[in-house]
Image (cartoon, rainbow, N blue to C red; front, side, top):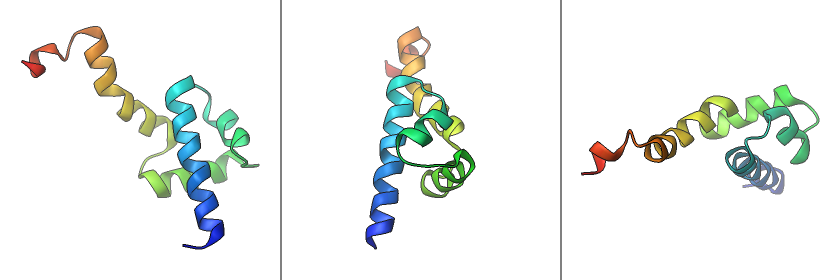
Length: 77
């Protein structure tokens, strides 16, 4: 992995963490982690994680939301 690829990976992982932790807008997070173009951020995010930022975060939050609102309890027993 080249230094540029490593930096891109770190930026995207930090962006994912921020999106999960802060419920922030994807464009704002893109700028915060060093992207100048939200569309470029979205393309690279999708390449790395397999989904656009909003869909990925929604997928990752889904089990947590189900547990928190009680609809997952039946599956745990």
